[in-house]
Length: 539
Image 1 (cartoon, rainbow, N blue to C red):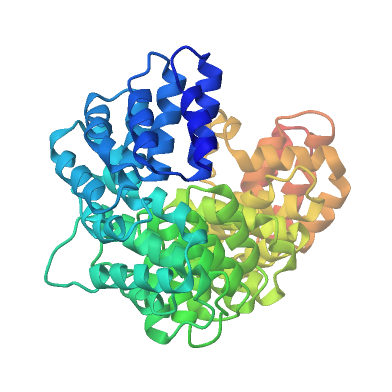
Image 2 (tube, rainbow, N blue to C red):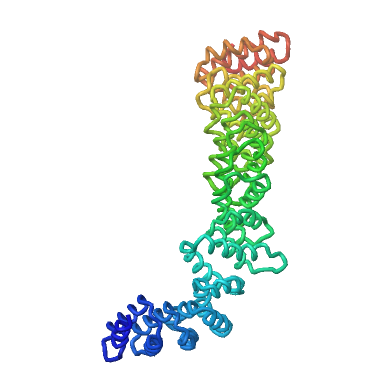
């Protein structure tokens, strides 16, 4: 071995090419010889003009633990550059002297170099560097802490069982230390490391760090770490999970959401899931929707109804679909529609239900129509939204309801109110003769019956009668003969107007005026009718 070392040492001579010197330094590290000649030769290589040779020499002195070169390594760290990180790693492997040297150097160098030192101490693998880990994790610079964590996590797979337990003991001591306030970066780092070590003792510590008393980065790390253990959470654990999922900070809500996907939605947890439907994060609401959205209960329906005002279309549509599938959901939708405080709100709810309205039971239509009727008679614009929805549900049914309401009111002599419903029916150009006659006749009852030509030309009821005459004047006369609720004054006004027309309209007027004479032979109106007949040449 000595001969081999001597041969290798000669190959480190500057007279040899850089590739040869690098190879010789590498092999020396693998052989493990540490006699004085090796340390001295490698120390000289640290000052070599070739960067590749210097870098290999740094790695080799660290592997061989050549303590005599520690001052050179520390100076190399202080000056920075490409070799600073390698020098820090090498120094960390030099035992207690190397650890102490790195610790003394930490306060004196730039932040970027401090991160190299932290990572080196965390991955040093010596008893002294392991003891220094806690101090590095307590550093006030989050980047220094992160560098140490990254190095420690990379080292974990190579640890023995005893080493893992010892490292967990260190971390648990920091986590359970309630007397000393630690920076959030430190606590989050401890949580991550405990999770990586998979020590069973860490579970309760992790649950404790989920509580809102801790900063978001700590809670996030604890929730992410609990994935290995949160298979059967206790009631207290569930409360913390749901509280975290409802948190406005996405860093906390996201990992909690992952854990909650495993939690069954039983009767005991329903109140928590209901609260999730009011969470800040859309993903949390969508999960709650999946868990309890199909339950037929008033509480669930009320929570789902709130989603209809959310800005995210997918959430609104999913909530609406579930509301329409349950009895309580339909009740909630209907109540919200009927209690809308404005026409805009009523329209939003009506449009939201339009696609599903055909599937709603008949009793629902009766309830909605009753409110729509109140709005119609109060000239409330919310009526339009309700009527739109009823039309979408069953247009024929709505037509029948409007017509029945109009006829019932007309029979009670509430002609102005009946006219409101008849005008709604008249929006449909396909309405039949009978409905148009009701519209014209009720209009006739409420008409001022001003015989002046200017007034008659703008009277809508006369325009409606003109259309009926063109449609079927004979049927119109037959119906008028049966309509006892039209009195002589109404008929006189009608006959008087059309007597001034020609053709079918004038003939119709003659029949109507004769009807006036027949119904009130000795009245002044009868005399006026006879006079109009003579004047129009209809006698």
